[in-house]
Length: 281
Image (cartoon, rainbow, N blue to C red; front, top):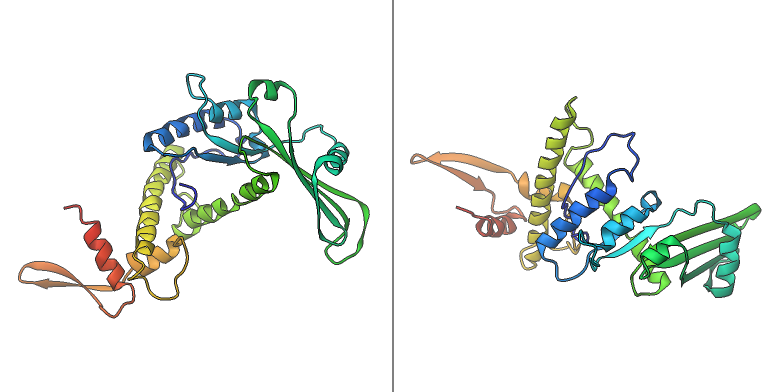
């Protein structure tokens, strides 16, 4: 789902609404949708610190009947009142140390943390990344301590560095958001009525998935795709420009309307193959 960039569900919210409000309920409905798809592997949920809540953990890790769902998660923790200096001391003692550049030391590790969350979800561990910068990227000495602490809840049985890498990979989702807003023109919803905009967003989600499916199906035709295209995912703007908006001429002959497409277009072989594959008549 996330690797190719499909949308399962969407929810329009007021800009003033906190990101956590309604999220556990939304995730519960989303898990039901995922179950209906019939995935043969667990889904991985990646959320930022605004959703660091026991209710969110419950919605992901437990089914409606309280049994374990089998899903995986990486949720950035809200440090709240935790002391960054304590994390630095802990990382220095237990973490893996590396120095990406002179003056910058990075520690990563995984550990158990007690408390109510650990009692309720014993399968969870905390992954930490502590970065201690003595100088900036240009080599200038920092006047004040520059300490960065990032921690995550996770139940994935992989190393700390892999967990951090997986979390940062969620930046790809921002590209999908950009395609919905920019490539499809859903940057600003047109109506002054909230319910109308909700309907438009739902329709946009359907169109988004159809375009994504066309793009991925096109890339699957490796012997027909034009040379030089090596990507694993086709941006929606490219799908619209190359296949949806392909130049053509409508001709009426013998009482029949026909669409004539220039055979010299490099995407014509792909279009012909997809047109036959998607013929639902």
